[in-house]
Image 1 (spheres, rainbow, N blue to C red):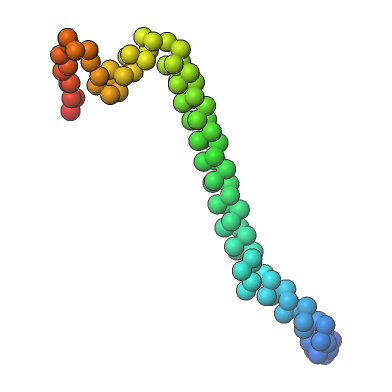
Image 2: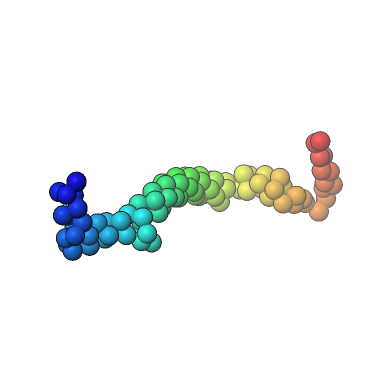
Length: 95
């Protein structure tokens, strides 16, 4: 026991112990915060991949619509309920 008490009287040992405790538990960049931040980073990277894939799909759809007039007309009729002057438009709502 005397052997351990000798170390507690040493200034450098006490300071080092205090520093380690401070960095691990008390500091704003402690271990727990780092784990939370790393999990948040992984989640955000997954979302980034999802939105990049969605962006590529939307660009492909847009390119297809702009190159084909029939597809553009179909899209406008279905999405925005557009019609020609001589047509009547009926919307069927399914419950």
